[in-house]
Structure formats: C-alpha cells, structure tokens
Amino acid sequence: MANTKSAKKATRVIERRTAVNKARRTRMRSSWRSVEEAIATGDAKTAAEALRAAESETMRAVSKGVVHKNLGSRKVSRLAKRVGALSGAKKRS
Image (cartoon, rainbow, N blue to C red; front, top):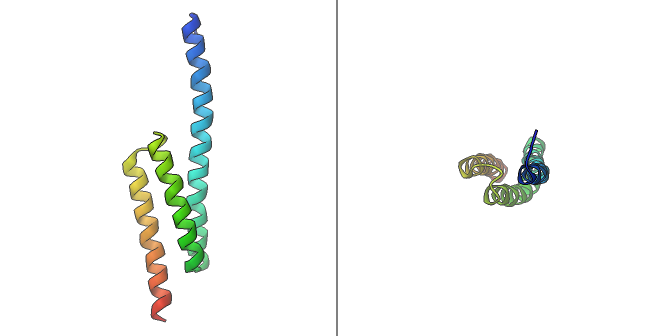
C-alpha cells in the first residue's frame, strides 16, 4: 500500500493509464479480428478496407507505447500478406 502522497498519486495515474491502454489494446485486437473475419468470408474488398483500419489502429497503439513496434509491424505484415493472397486468388479466377 502506498504511504506517501506522491506514491498515492502515482497509483491513481497508473490506474488511469492502464484503463486507457487497455481500451487501445482492445480496439487494436478488434480491428485485427475484423480483418480475420473478412478474410474468412473471402471478401477481398472488405478485407482490404478492414486492413487499412487495422493498420492505422495498430500503428497508433505502437506510437503510444501500448505494444512493441516489432509486434505491430509483424501483425500488419502477416495480415497484409493474407489479404493480398485473397485479392490475388480472386483476380486469377
């Protein structure tokens, strides 16, 4: 338990920042899920739009320090690769 005034304030600040970061992380993961669902349905256009939103949300979380930049880049890259394969498969047929 915090004893000093500054330690008590630090605890309050940490609680607020944790709530903000949790919301950002949830929003980011939801955007990934929307890309996954669009890929599962096979809709290339929807998947591309969802990917654009997911990339924006992910990079915003990276810039705010919620997740590491390598994690953000890796996730966006893998999703983009899958969306690209989906688009390529549609164009060939």
